[in-house]
Image (cartoon, rainbow, N blue to C red; front, side):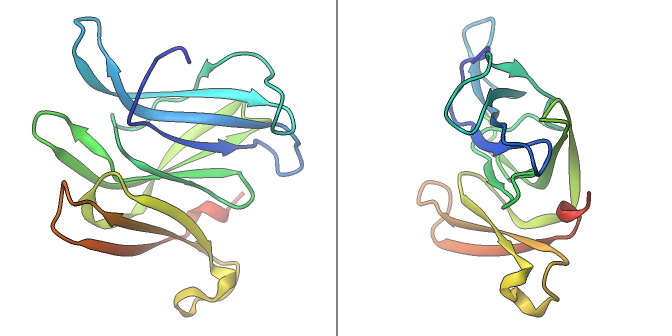
Length: 177
């Protein structure tokens, strides 16, 4: 990677549904700044692969996250055309967390990518959760199949809260072309 990091989230994305090439995406995280201190970053990097095994080139910078995030959760849609990023830590000193959900969408073999801030938000501000995309086709929460997807987060953070919890947020935008 161009920027070494920890506490980042990852996903994989392809620009076109029919393309065999995918990109591994490293998103945000904790970096060491020029003063040698830890800092949260908004940097995003891509590593292009052919059919998933052979590396095609080196890490390249992508569009920055809308905010600096570490310990965020990420989930890739089944078509690998969007990556959702939810929650995360926004401040190291104050231990402040985010309730926002972002989606990354790419076009043309992951050459042109952009972030969207979703209108749905998490019920609680949180970090370091497990995230997964659940297609509406599974009949989740009574919605018509294929019209939306749900992003589910499961947290069990003894460090940050006294109990575990699960939350599901409906995200309508992710399946639009």
